[in-house]
Length: 385
Ligand SMILES: *Cc1c(COP(=O)(O)O)cnc(C)c1O
Image (cartoon, rainbow, N blue to C red; front, side, top):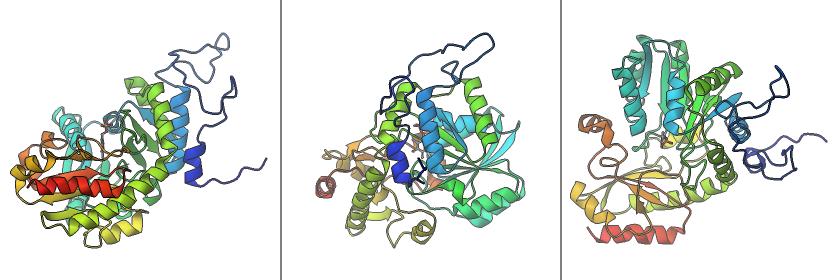
């Protein structure tokens, strides 16, 4: 049988199918066993202990590595566990450069590790080439990229930053949670490592908390797997099986969410009660041209400034019934979040101000419901103002 080269869409649907060595199950069975038999004295089989290796994690890791174009992957218990795992690659006092408007939890973790004296971390506006170049000049061990940024959807030039970071001798790391490999593959743009909160669009059904780290080289993948086993941050078999199930529909979900997001962003842009829309799929967005070159679509996340600040926010969210007020994103259902009091609260007011996260800023994760219902729901919120 000749092996047919597979399109990523086919890869996500077919990942791990028909490989069950026990009963020839089409869909991979769930292996919950914490331990595995040895073949004999000093003869270890491919699986020995569940923290170290597990078939369900392995199938998901192979699928994600294939999609991202990496040599290997590690499946972790959360996105934050994935980031913390990556930090193990740093030397003592390793210099990290992160984006000033990165995911709030990433900001908190980096700051906490810096306070402990484990790393030194600088947060910078990565759209400001001069500021980034000045920091890189002082030397860097790791550069963390997140694009588009959360919650302001700022787009940074991944290939350009990767190139500059390499010259400075840094490991280039991208958080690809927002776009997923269905829209961008940072390894192809020059990064060394990609990580995900699989909690979001990879699983896509808001019923798993998980993470993944994908490495470009087998050496880095092996080093990450060593640390994951050492520190015990690997994910559960059930979560891996659920995530693989979700992954099969990644492309159709992304297409549907993005189509709705384009409609909603255009509608919000024209709305008189909206101050500003942040969405790289709009021609008016400062990230539009760059996004068009490095990603195959704008994604499904939209932020917008409500006129009227905090008072308006309370009134706006009260009547919503389809856009539920909750953190997280990337599920089939639409969600709305107020970054200043929810996802980014831990950042502190001063840092939020620097990042440009205002009191009236709302962030929506656009789901796959019908767009007319989504618009009608948001209109209820506007009517309450
Ligand atoms: C949610 C999220 C994370 C953190 O992942 P968890 O699974 O919640 O630990 C990191 N980065 C981005 C962009 C996220 O949206």
